[in-house]
Image 1 (cartoon, rainbow, N blue to C red):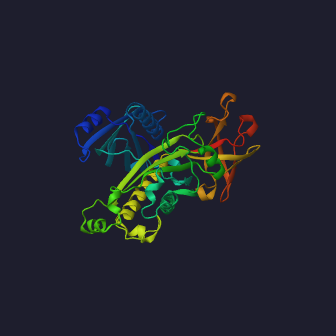
Image 2: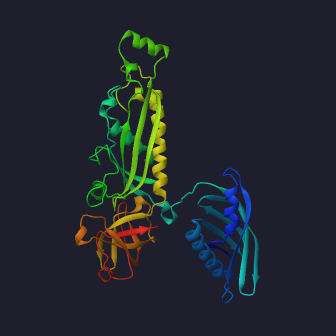
Image 3: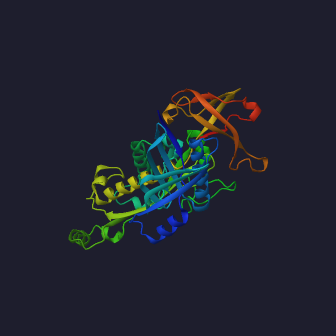
Length: 406
């Protein structure tokens, strides 16, 4: 009989930290980690799991490191073990090299190749679910820069291309709002807050579109490096033909991802590029035109949009899946997400109460854990329902509260 035991292995922390600081990120070092656990009633599996969980909490709180393991047991014998270390280090080729029991004390020793690396996130249990995202328009800070090449539609076309890239990746449910302008003050966007500490009207937009996140942006720069290089005189044309002018065009875009429930930004980054604007007269008639795409600049822009899509996807991968409660009838709970988001019958979601106070009715709602879960019984394309152990009125769960999978 095959069984899987998931838990955590305690590493020799001081050895890991010291050696990682001495070794460059491109080089791996082989290290050993030791974990201990007390055994009660000869329950070896539970003792191993308890010790590893305690070790993980200790690692996470003190050193911001995380180790996850998966052990395969066959007839009571450990046949396979794999581990992943996520934080400022990576682990590979990890194996259990010793498991020794002495009385009621269990000691496990593992060995693996550890190297420095960037933290990654698989999204946990929410990783298989498709979070809902709305893409708004990216207005131009200086519209006059778009006259050359007639690319004044960039504020609408660029986010449409970003939207297409996110859809093709297949990890998110993407909704279009590219005709919407989220920020009233483009010069200071997206850092200007309203009096209630919310960023613009993102909460209202997210609620109207039924999304968890809103992606917005501002095109800061779309101008040419040397405006004089684009003169119409014979001399100007000769200079361009000889390559003696700076024909580069710039792109600088600020992208921000906002949480639709609180209005708070969870990701913000500026994307920039520059390339030759080698469009012949009349060949470019719009940001998404064929003539634009054939220019060196258009190809560079396409690469930046790809970078945007990957950055947004990675930023949202670490976020929990959240959806609104649309109805509570006794123990029956109806949610605003269903099969298109990846929910399935049997899924369990934690229920959180959403509350606002009289002195800040327009402010960010505060979530409190109800210590209750809803188990889904029926899943439809755009909604689902399930039951919770107690009647909603007894635990004050109601419409507009939140269900979460971490």
